[in-house]
Length: 399
Ligand code: SF4
Ligand code: SF4
Image 1 (cartoon, rainbow, N blue to C red):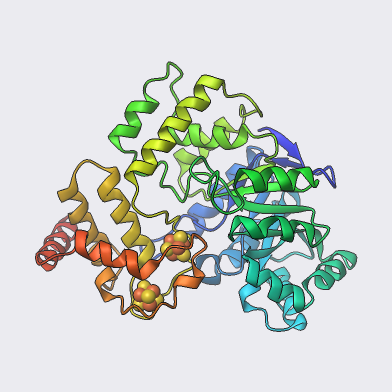
Image 2 (image 1 turned 90 degrees about the horizontal axis):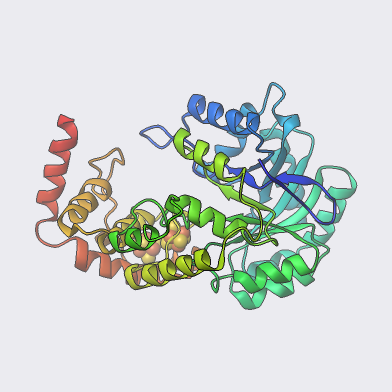
């Protein structure tokens, strides 16, 4: 495991952080505690010392899970990060109320890295007015938090002013080779680092979009290089190639992936990719842009929908339609997964959308969700949808 320093404190953090937003789950989407605990502890045993959770992850169950999973000596081995749910804050008192509840849920007397969660420009203005900088100062002074930061999903124009608005120790941004110019982007990464902030990276694989279904056209480009790496390794190495990056979070829930990530994190030094390799990644990026239809990362902030639509799942299947090479199979998978044949329960089709617009402002990727859902209906539903659902239910009942 390689380690990089938080500039202000000199704290040495593992370059791979364990993200607790997509933990190993049961069929009903509750956390598979036994498996997730083993995975988290094994990552820590192999050098990971940064664990990231947040109030809303797993519908509020991630923090209590992390508290239990770090019992028995693991808490002392890690720097623990969690986040103030900024959108739920109505008063200055709420901030203390949430932090104190989080300390209890996490079974700890301090949070090592505490972030104001999911800021966009307006939200920052609101919490700043309510006294969030005073809150952070006093929580640091009384020892409840050690380092203060923020996570960001806003427009690039708001990033620098938030960096400049407080004496932050670190920030967390979405960054991968498809997001160089999205949200904080490369300019934000470099600006934050120039101001002495540690930078934690989220969504290095863009919610799995860069690895889950690798389109044949992208595979062909990856295969051109004599150095053989998986798409995940290319994506991680590209992020770690930037010296401004401190930690890369991965929402790990699969043993083989954890092993692979740990191996990559042994070798991913800054500036370790050659110019030819960087050009290769650039070509893959261009190909993805040609193929993808919607930039959804699967963050779930738009959920739940009052009409029962599962937009992230609809968008995942919609992208798969374009990233794969078997449209009939993708249409079947849409019916199976979104139609409730595979564990989800109720149908969550795009056509259930009543265009209320409630989800739009919650989307950090600024996706016009109801509009894109109309395209999903047009391309993935159609008159034979119920037949496909019935066939999928039959198939999954038999297997
Ligand atoms: S716009 Fe559609 S998807 Fe969004 S919350 Fe309303 S019904 Fe749900
Ligand atoms: S549509 Fe937006 S808010 Fe919903 S999961 Fe995708 S990126 Fe997240």
